[in-house]
Amino acid sequence: MTYTHTQPVHHGLVERVGEWPGLSSFRAVCDGKASVDLAYLDEEAWHASGARPETIADYTARVSVPVSMPGLWRELSELELRAARRTHEKSVRDVERQEAVNRRHRRLPKGSHYTRIDPFSRPADVEHSPKPWAHATEDDQKAYRRAYSAMLAAYRVASARFRETGVLCAFPAGTRPPWIARAPVMT
Image (cartoon, rainbow, N blue to C red; front, side):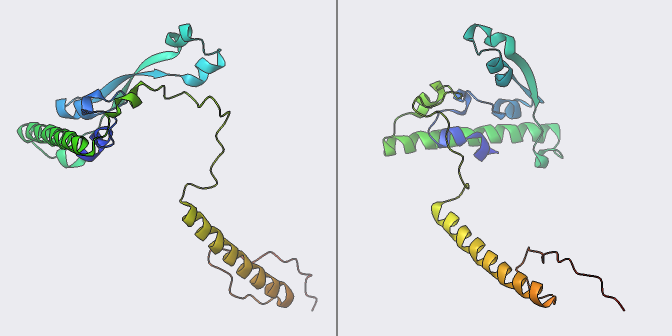
């Protein structure tokens, strides 16, 4: 939980967890609240209406997102639960202090400028980003293509042998023999 709550701090986007403008369950967990309230923009409907800034309030609604209690905390008494919440808050504050020290040593600028960027904006010189072929490193993509080509070659060999002889042979894992239409045998 500490790891999840401190990611914006760890990546230098904010100095304190409470500064994160996005959805965070940190305060709800520490205060024992059952939900987090936030404003939700129905962006699709807003854009369909022309996306005029003066109408954004018409497409914004307040929603309540439930926050479930961590599994290990469900069996705790009320006194133990309050202690667990205090311990979690202390852990988060410790990470904030350590990241502040790390920032000074790395001499990195405070990343709060990221929080002022409109998350729905697109680069001015790009109409649409191309879809990636795969979400993997270039080396992993090359390895996948090599493995796929090898599997396809093995399938074609096995398929040709099966079509010629009609005898089932070994096909690559995860593949099926092709369907072959056979004339009924007359006896």
